[in-house]
Image 1 (cartoon, rainbow, N blue to C red):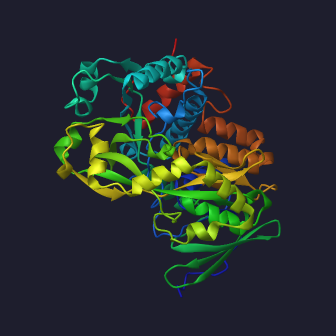
Image 2 (image 1 turned 135 degrees about the vertical axis):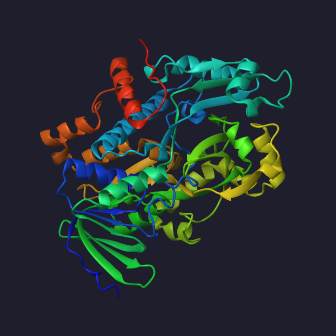
Image 3 (image 1 turned 90 degrees about the horizontal axis):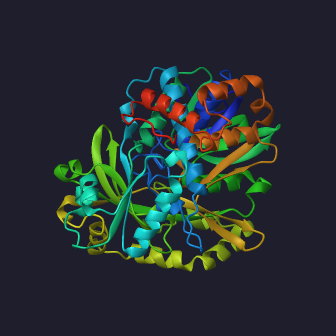
Length: 505
């Protein structure tokens, strides 16, 4: 046994399960609000951000709704619903403010490691899709959050933006694109590890890596968390006043172990993913954008196809996908028993009903699993007609677990998004679901703190600190173009984003 290891360390205030972007954000925010808080982080792997937050696993790297068409559905009357896009765009601006605050507060210099400018583009072909993109552009640009978005049906102009997308395309094909110069690429793995590096130097913060949580039991108004060291089976027992379960796909089984009534009826549907990674540096250097298209009918939002430039470990990379698949694992490094072991009497009916109502999704996943190399290349060539198979390799992306929950009207529904489930007394909270979680982590954690720490959240001291961390705190950026321009100017200067901020006059 490790001589420095204590199986029953002193009680703590906050227990964070999972060392991903959500726990890092919550830990940093709580420490800024109340520096004397004692925080314990428990992670099943040997490093932080190795699952969903890792750059190679993350399906989206800067969701701001500039280019993701699934956030702007077309209504039955033909109009475009932009409400979700506005919410996500605002949340991303809030995240940038918090990151800029941390950069200033802790003199973080190497910001290029996690955030960089990149054009965000949507690209479609065919008359119906071209008309949809026109209406989407017209609707979005009514909001100051999307001011400056360019729209074009000119093949030559689009070729200037993204030559690889246009080269080899059939002559006369009807195409359209939108371009937002304010887009960014975010390496959430690097950002997460950076925040944990700051946390580990703070008093009262303790890390336990390679520890698998086995049980959560109520104790004296708080919780006792039992975990086991995965290498030598040493048992760890920690008592905490508040527990946050931010374990990505592994959150659902842990939430079920808590036995809180609020978890009743929740289930999960795992979706795996694969990427085509470009290996030809000449091709990689010729593409400089995140180009999103329309998802296939019945496919999950995380499977929206995109030809995606990213900065990973200081080097430009190019990916296409993700291609969806099915696995019973809830984590990329999880167990094939994750799904069957998550099924209980309380969630069996909602899961069966949601499954029955989503047969097109099941059919889509089956077809994705059956894809050949030729099928994947054909999908890539819809976005890059001259793609050569020798320039690309197949790689596994991350694992996502979509939320299934009880519904009074329908019995059970499958949701594509994130959901915070919390105990009635606010002593425990869990984050379930996937996209667009990482990009909106700051807004999600603000809401969680207000829900689970309502008394402290109303303290004048906390309110003042929140306004310091997030200058737009409590205000709508969509309704205040001047404030939006001000906070964008601040965040772009601090974060080193080399694009002038844009807002409606």
